[in-house]
Amino acid sequence: MERILIVDDNIDIAELESYILKSEGYETVITHSGEEALEVINKEKFDLILMDIMMDGISGIELCAKVRDKVDCSIIFVTAKANLVDKMIGFEIGADDYITKPFENQELVSRVKAHLRKDKRNKSIPKGNIIKIGDIQINKENYEVLKKDKKIKLSTKEFEILLYLMENAGLVLSKEQIYENVWKSSYGDIGSVAVHIKNLRDKIDKEEKYIITVWGFGYKFTKEINE
Image (cartoon, rainbow, N blue to C red; front, side, top):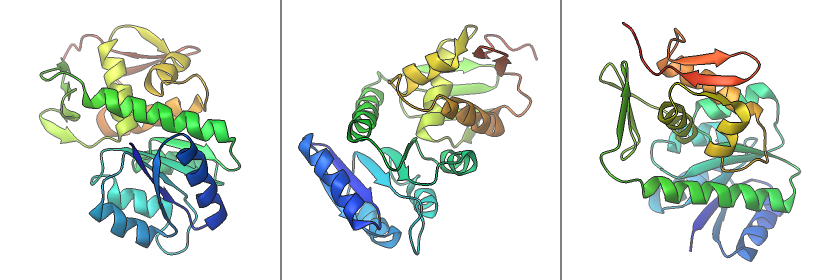
């Protein structure tokens, strides 16, 4: 049974999320502060974390930054903060998805199921799968990305987008294709793709010679690099 950690200082919302997910067969643990969640995460293992952003004390943004390197599961923000800047900050520090309050029960369930399926698939990837294009190398086994032999730290979603782009190097991929293949859903915020692409470029491709924008359609990862 998958275990889901819920972090929200609103008791009613936390209990609602727990009720919805328990009805789907998941085990849930509720914490009502970033401080409490940090203690629990240091002691226990979870398959997914849902967290609010606006909390007294340690905020969701701070908590995500503190635990991102300690957990290998998806982190989904469930929050009333929904502007682009908030999303960019969340994705930059390692969040994998974003659900805006108030949410539909089925949306919460669908997002959770999609991320849990994705995490299972990623953990079952065969060993020895390495893709290298130019100075960038990605290892599908250990989630490692290198540029000029230097390890680059990416969030789970950034890694998955980079992997999808590199596996399809040379092909122009629409934002819809990227979203459906990475998020494993056609329901959600397609604009999240552009935010993650920007973060990827900031980390591995500031010159934009690998990830090429095809205006009016999407993106392409260069198949060959001429140095």
